[in-house]
Each structure stands twice: as structure tokens, then as C-alpha cells.
Image (tube, rainbow, N blue to C red; front, side, top):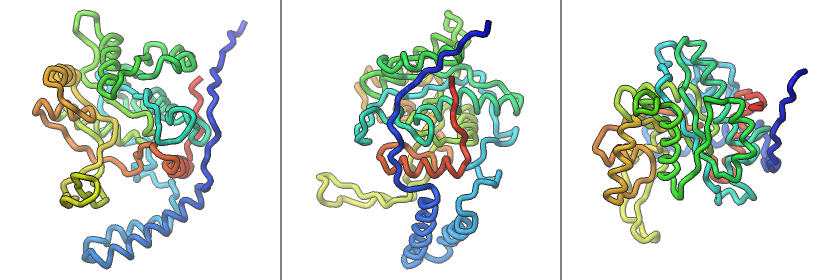
Length: 337
């Protein structure tokens, strides 16, 4: 007799998007063209030629994703760009509440196109990345740890069962640092030999609210971490940043050329992260992300150039943008169970 597979049904609200992908693409083109025109009034023409070229290219292609050379729409990279993942474990942080989304559930469970936001990360690390590694003849990630509130874990148990030995739960902490620490302990526990040997040398921490990261980005940041000990995806800051002491008056303008907006995954040596946790607790340090812990140790962190499309779902408007990007990438419906 054929065994019956029970599919988990997770109820998610319908997408609230009111702007279709085609309308959003058109709006984006108009905004880029307007931005280029405004920029030309303040910036030398030699510095805006790239923006003009980008606007022209987007206008011609209308966000068409047929080109394989653009990493934004590519799920593959060359052999030299794909590292061995056998000693790399992934933590997916899915314990946030998403209060700014004004929704009745955490943002990672909201429906983005046809699947929950969280499922895009699960599918990437459990299906697409291993398939790419097989194509490139390198080992896939050793383990994926899903840091999730216990009250949601029963709904995701069928997925954990399907990927037995490749996916495990960990409970979140009160803050991000506690969640990462719990996830790291589970990673060491599930991949080690029980005597402190073996297991993962590197951990890649990823926010489940970033469903648009690409395989080339992951390959590049992991490669950089293996060379430098720690690496973080990021992009040069495009906005002008003002500093204020009281939230009313401007204290100064921070030079934009020195500012980067950091994304995830953030990839760190497990040994260094464990040492960092001890230092943070011992000295009561305040850290805002994973590589900040490595900075506190005085050790280098490599900035890996990522993509502006690796946005974090924070507000309802972000869902519209992510929806349009996924539509233009031609992402199929995700089936994890």
C-alpha cells in the first residue's frame, strides 16, 4: 500500500498588494527616470552616466529576467564562485513578531505571492542551493536550523520530518543575540561528533524576512568568510544620513561614501562567534547584529557586495516590491511538503 503523505495546511491571509507587477515596474521606471533628471542638477554628468544607463536598460527590458548574466535574476554562478558548503551551517531566524507590518501574525508567515515569506528561505537553503551545489560538484550545506517560536513549530513539523537530518528546530531568545546563540547551540549539537570534533566551521545567519537573496550572493559571502573569518552582505548606502542628538535638530551629515547598509546572510566562524558571545556577556556589550560580535573581538569582517533587491520585509509596501521582483524572476510556487 502506498503511504499517505499528510500535508500541513497553514492559514495565511491573502496578499494585500493592490499594485500589479506591471504597474509597479512602470512606476519604478518613472521613478528612476525622474531621479536621474533630479540628480543631474546636483551631480557632475560623469557620475550619473551609470544611472542614466541603468534607466535606459530597464526601460528597454521592462524588468525582463531573460538575461543570465544579471545575478539579480540568476540562480547559478561559475565553478570558481561556488565554495564547498560541507562545513557551513545555516540559521534561519523566524522568531520575530513583525509589529510594523500591522498584520495579525508575524511577517515571516504572511503570504507573498503563493507562499509564506519564510518558505522562500527554506526552499532556497533546502532545495535550490543543494541542487546548485550538485550541479557544481561541491558539497551542500551541512544543516539548516530554523529558529522559531514553539507555538508555530507543530505546523512546520511535517517539513522538518521531510528533511530529517538536514533541518532542525531551535527556540528563539528574548533578543536577536539569544536567538542566534540558541540556533548555534543546536547547530553544534546536530552536526558535531559529541566530543567537540567535526561539525560546522562556519555559520551563516539569515533573516527569514529577506526572501529575495540569491545563490550568487550566498556563494560570494561564504567564500569571503572562508578567506577573512567573517563576512556580511551589504550595499553602499544611497540615502543621505543625518545625525541628531535630540531627534529635532541636525547635528551633522555623515559622509555617505563610508556607509553601507548590511543584509543577511552574515557568515562567521563558529569558534569566533562562541568567543564573541562570551565577551559580550562578560562585558555586557550591546550588539545589533552577528558580525558586530566579531567587531567587538577586534577581528576583521569582510563587506561582500550584495544586491539592493535583497530587501527586508518590514512594512506593507515592501510586500508589493517583493511581489513584483518575484513575478519578474518567474519564481514558481513553492512546495515543501
